[in-house]
Image 1 (tube, rainbow, N blue to C red):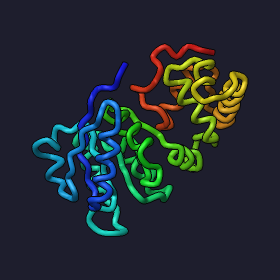
Image 2: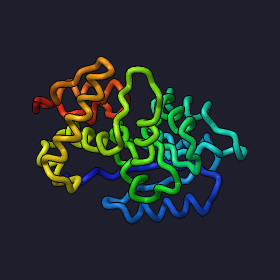
Image 3: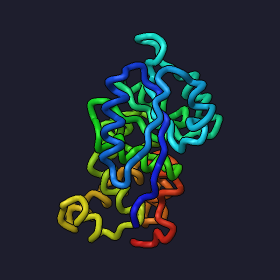
Amino acid sequence: MEDRPVTVVMLDNHDVVIDGVRGWCARARPPIRLIAAGTRFARVRTGEGAAAEVVVFDLGLQKEGVHEFHELSRLVREGRNVVVFSGEESPAVVLECARLGAKSFVTKAEGEEHLIHAIRAAAKGETYTTPKHAGMIVADPVPGRPALSEKQIEVLLAWCSGLSKPMVARKLHMSPSTVATHIERARGHYERVGRPAPDKLSMTNRLIQDDLLSPKEADPLADDP
């Protein structure tokens, strides 16, 4: 089913960036309507900006080198779906944005495809994990979180979001045996940290616990072995 139209309000202090994203949104199908707020937080909270389903937010709005974590946290507390779109690539900053409740973190180097996917997901209240962000989560030394590879995370997210193993194989251009191998190795990692995931339902719960998958994205019929 075709995604419904989405309205976005964008906070960024560079007009050229806003114009570029506006072009990406116009090319999306269906198109995404963008409202430019510049550095004016008031535009996010009044008029059309207040009704926008997604806030696209650059962390460095007011002063170079200063991250607007306070404003990000405030937007999340207000119930806004925030996608951080930033030139910042520090793992500590990316993980802090996730901790504060941003739906996605897309670096400006990752560009059009990932930002549009992140906006679509955020409009539904869902998270979207880019490959770079997934790599940072893999490296994040959280106690009890297994050291999954980026490919294992990619396979698990597809599988636990509602696809069968053969469907995951087709989507990710892998053989079914490779998909099964990634899942079994991920299960081994969870087993070794004392958090077994012997079936699809338990693996789905593990991904939700580790902030890799939102409850809304999870397969409600996760019963595959």
